[in-house]
Length: 434
Ligand SMILES: *[C@@H]1O[C@H](CO)[C@@H](O)[C@H](O)[C@H]1NC(C)=O
Ligand SMILES: *[C@@H]1O[C@H](CO)[C@@H](O)[C@H](O)[C@H]1NC(C)=O
Ligand SMILES: *[C@@H]1O[C@H](CO)[C@@H](O)[C@H](O)[C@H]1NC(C)=O
Ligand SMILES: *[C@@H]1O[C@H](CO)[C@@H](O)[C@H](O)[C@H]1NC(C)=O
Ligand SMILES: *[C@@H]1O[C@H](CO)[C@@H](O)[C@H](O)[C@H]1NC(C)=O
Ligand SMILES: *[C@@H]1O[C@H](CO)[C@@H](O)[C@H](O)[C@H]1NC(C)=O
Ligand SMILES: *[C@@H]1O[C@H](CO)[C@@H](O)[C@H](O)[C@H]1NC(C)=O
Ligand SMILES: CC(=O)N[C@H]1CO[C@H](CO)[C@@H](O)[C@@H]1O
Image (cartoon, helix red, strand yellow):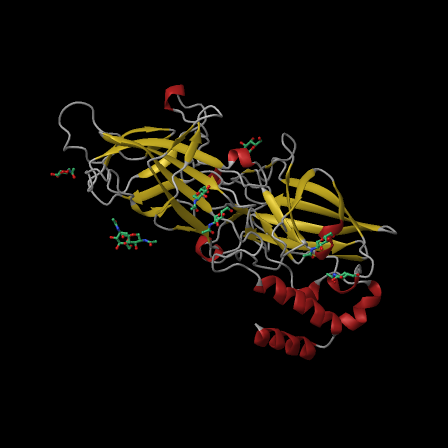
């Protein structure tokens, strides 16, 4: 009974800290800031827009950001560098000379692709809208573009009017309006600084409940002391045969693969038929027990047959991670830099080795082993302690097995198989607690 209660406690803990309202306890300062710098304001307003991904572990993956805003007046964009508007729109008002780059009231701006013509580039541009997380590669977490705008409602000396209603075009993010902040200073040569005429910040926050109604990842467990493998919970991400859920049987080549996917759209995952129906499965195997250490093998498997996950990452919560001694084949960085947590860390692939989790069928998994020192007084294989409390893949929460199903120590089995009545009672207790 005690086992069940302890496990249920961990379970309730791990579900109750899920950030559902935009605040992520693992990354409390995380946001994407879009800074607008008005560089000059004679004839046209010349602006420099910089997108900073200031999130520790969330990144923007292909097809990338698609920034949209609404002009307040009759602004048109005459020129753009480092990015482009997807639509030119109705420029019929301009009858002579060059036409503007975009006359849309609500332009949608996309990053240029790598290898764009040199004269169209800016510093930090041309990554197809992909932004790395701060932990993985801060040098790739920033994007910049420039635009020349004229014809605003406030075409007086006030110059430029900040547009409103921003969206990042990535599921899960919502953005504020711009607020004017201290003007940015730009270093010229180390001795002299220039300054923007005006600067505004727009802040975009992530909220998982906005992002996706269904999970995209699940966790399975095993241990050297129990021959059972605890699979991902059935229907973790979807159920086979449920209307709207499609999957491809093992060994079959899907007809979908022959269809050309639109590279500009977020494609729906096409998964192999499994009982969990998730595109990603993370397996945690408690592999070995040494005198002072214990060893875990982690395997991430891609069941999405249409997608390679480049620059994937895992965030793992386990109380023993603060005594992590060695990590093989993955990069690791603790996430607890704000002092709330000491038990959370991030794993990601090694460059040129397993940075890309390729599609199922090619070689769809990445693996690592980690060695952890046993904290005196805390360490135990009992009561599911050796298993992670929480895992996310690319920032998406993975569905964990029920604590009742966890691998059990041989001598733990009897006490753990407590009566159903007590289990139900404990569940009700947890529900009341939440
Ligand atoms: C956005 O992130 C930066 C850097 O982490 C932080 O300084 C700032 O307070 C954050 N803004 C909001 C509104 O959370
Ligand atoms: C911005 O969005 C609000 C609410 O959706 C809407 O009422 C308003 O008209 C929009 N502003 C512009 C300039 O489109
Ligand atoms: C373009 O805008 C003008 C007014 O600026 C309008 O008269 C014309 O009908 C519009 N054309 C289309 C195709 O919407
Ligand atoms: C931004 O400003 C516009 C116009 O003032 C308003 O309609 C909209 O609701 C604001 N959006 C946010 C997120 O505050
Ligand atoms: C505006 O955003 C930039 C980039 O994140 C940051 O350096 C600056 O401190 C922000 N300004 C304010 C007042 O938050
Ligand atoms: C994924 O990568 C593999 C190996 O590099 C490649 O053969 C395959 O075409 C890629 N698939 C997609 C969907 O990009
Ligand atoms: C985190 O761990 C370090 C080293 O194990 C320890 O010194 C520190 O007090 C811990 N912090 C918290 C908040 O538990
Ligand atoms: C997670 C946990 O129970 N940590 C405890 C491990 O043991 C030390 C002292 O031995 C405690 O301070 C921790 O709270």
